[in-house]
Image (cartoon, rainbow, N blue to C red; front, side, top):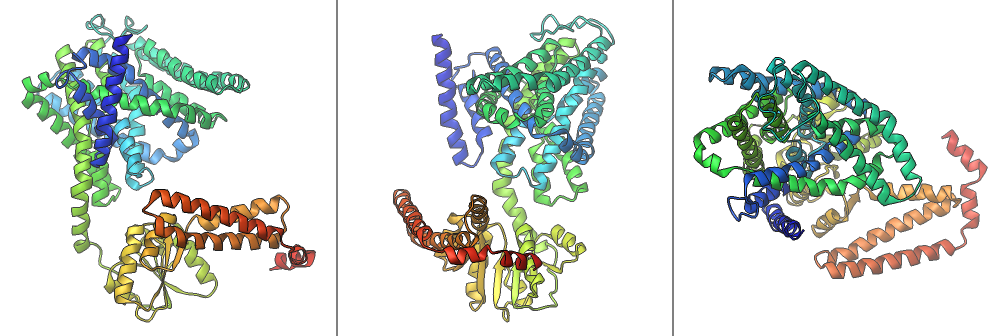
Amino acid sequence: MNGFLANAILYILAAIICVPIAKKLGMGSVLGYLFAGILIGPYLLGFITNEGQGQDIMHATEFGVVMMLFLIGLELEPKNLWKMRQLIVKIGLTQVLATSVLVFGIGLLLDVQWQISLAIGLSMALSSTAIVLQSLKEKNQMNTPTGRMSFGVLLMQDIAVIPILALLPLLIFGQAAPAAEASDMHGLIDTLPGWAQTLSIFAAIGIVVLLGRFGFGPLLNWVAKTRQRELFTASALLIVVGISFLMELVGLSPALGAFLAGVILANSPYKHALESDLEPFKGLLLGLFFMAVGSTINFSLIFNNASTIISLTLGIILLKTIILLVIGKTKKLKLASNLSFAIGLSQVGEFSFVTYAFALQLGIFDQSISDTLMAVTALSMTITPILIVVFDKYIVPAINKSSETIEKEMDNIDEHNKVILVGFGHFGSTLGRFLRANGVEATILDSDPDRVEYLRKMGFKVYFGDGTRAELLHSAGASEATILISAIDNTDYSIKLVELCKEEFPHLEVMIRAKNRYDAFELMEMGVKNIYREHLDTSIRMGEDVLKKLGFRAHTVHRLAKQFRDYDEDALKVLVKFKNNRDEYISKSRQQIEMQESLLSGELMRKFSVNDHTWDSDSIKEATAED
C-alpha cells in the first residue's frame, strides 16, 4: 500500500510541476503531461523502473481514453452523425485509405511481408484523438473549419477501428495464433479461426448496441429515483467499465465500445448528468494516460536503433502531413488553417497501441516489430505537440504577415454612405439588416473572402478588405462618413480600428462591439464612448420576459430594465479604474451591486400604477398588434 501511495504522490507531483510550466510556455497541457511521464520514467529519474511497469500503467490509464470516447459519443446524436457524413466519409475515409495504401505500398517496396505491411498501414493511419481534441479545445478551435475537419477525420478513424480489428484475424488465414500465448492480451475468441473471430467481433458490437438501447436507460432511471448523486455516478462508471470489460473479453478496443454506447445514449434524458459526472474522471485519467505514454518511450531502443526509429517517425509524420495537406487543399482551406489541420493530425494515435497488441497476439507481428512500432508511435505523439507549438508561435505569424502582401486585392468601393459597418458575421448582418429595413444604407466591409462571396450570393452588397487599413477606409468614404461601426468579435482588431480612426478620421463617431466588460474596459481606456456588450441586452431582455411572466406590469418592466442598464453602464465607469487591482475591484463591485439593487428596489416601490396599467390596456395591445 505504501508503494501505491508513494507512486500516486510522484505522479501527481510531476503533473503539478510540469503541466503549469508547459502551459506558461504556451505548449499546452498534453505536452506537459508527456514531459512529466518522461521525467519520472526509467531513463531520467527512474521512478518507473522499467518499460513493462510503464506499459502496465498505460493499460490502466487507457481508461481515460475510454471515458473521452464515451463522452464524445454522448455529444453525437445519430442524426448529427448523419449531418456530418460528408466530413466523416469524404475527408476522414480519404485520409484513412490514402495513408493505409501508401504505407502498405512502401512496406512492399522494402520487402516487408504483405500481411505485416497491411497491418502497419492500417495502424499508422490512425491519429491521436486525445491529443488533437485537447489541443483544439485549449485553442478554442473546435468550431473553426480546421476543428470541424479534424473532428470528422478523427471520428472516421475511431469508426475505422471496428473493421481494422475485424480484418486483422483474417490475415492469419484460419491458422492458430503463434504469439497468443506470449501476449498479455487474452480474449474468449483467441482460439477461434480468423473468420469466427471476425464474426465474434461484430456480435460483441451488436450486444453493446442492444445494451445501450434497451438496458442502460432502465438502469439509469431506476438509480435516478433514489436521488443519490454518488449512486448515479457509480452507475455511469459501471456502464463504461462494463462495456470495456465486454470488449476486452473478445480482444476488442474498450474505447470503441464506449464510443458506440455514448452515441446510443446521446438521446437519453440522462445525457447531461452522465457528462457532468464523468468529466472529472476523464480529465484526470487522460492526463495520467499521457504521462504513461511519456514513460513508455523506450529510449534505449531508440538510441540503439536511432536512425531507423527516427527515420520511421519523421517519415510517417511527413507522409500523413502531405496527405492531409492535399485533402485540406481540395477543401479550399487557407494555408495557415491547412497546415494546422495537417500537422495536428500527423501523429500516430493511441488506438494503434491496441492494433499492435492485437497483431502481436495473432502472430502477424513478432516482438521486435511491435516494440519498434510502439516506440515510433510514442515518439510521434511527443513530437507533434512540439510541432504544433512551433507552428502556432512562429509559422502562423510569418504566414499572416506574408499573406498581407499577397492577399486578394481589395475591392474598389463605388458607394459612400454616412455609416460604415466593419464585419458582417451573425452580429453585423443582423445590425445591417435592421439599418437597411429602416432606410439607412451602410457601406459594409468584411475581410473573409469566403463570407463575402457567400453574402453576395445572398443579395448583400459587401466589399472585401481589412477595415484596419487606412487606404480601404479612405476608399469607403470614411472622410465624409459620420459613424463607423465595428461588429467584429475580436478586441485586438477593434483596438487597431480605434487607433486608426483617432489618427486618420478623428471626426468619425466610433461604435464598438465588445464581448464582455473586460473588453469594454480596454476600449474605455482608449476613450471610446459607444461600447456595446453583446450579452448585456440579451440578458436584460430575458429578465424582462421573466418579470412579465411573473405578473409585473409592462411599463414597470420597461422602466426597470432601462434603469438597470443605465446603472450597469455607470458602474462600468467606476470599475474601470480598479480593473488591475483584484481586491479593490471585488470590493467596488460588491458596492456597485448593492447600490444598484437598492436603487432598483426604491424604483419598484414608486407608484407607477396609472401609467403601468395604461401600457397594458386593451386599446394599446390592439394597436400594437395591428402595427
